[in-house]
Image (cartoon, rainbow, N blue to C red; front, side, top):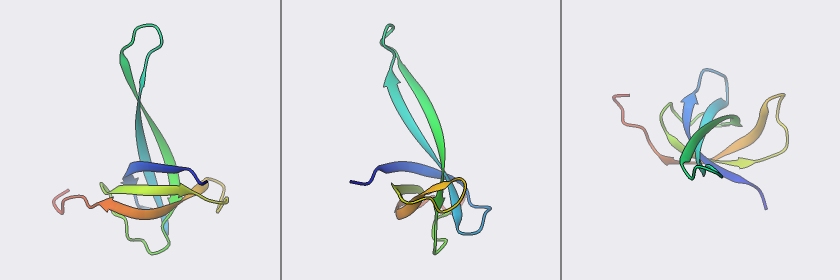
Length: 83
């Protein structure tokens, strides 16, 4: 089973590549307070359909380049046009 991640597109400057930020919340072991962490992933976007601010689903794939190990599966929610 391939891993899936949901995130928000934060960069589209490269050709057929998007940068996706995936935010996670994890509870601290001792203090029980929730800590937010953000990870960035480079994903392959063959048709260049994603725009900055979109919510997307990315799936794990074979290495495409030095940094790209993910592929855009689908755009879940479009960003408003004004952003």
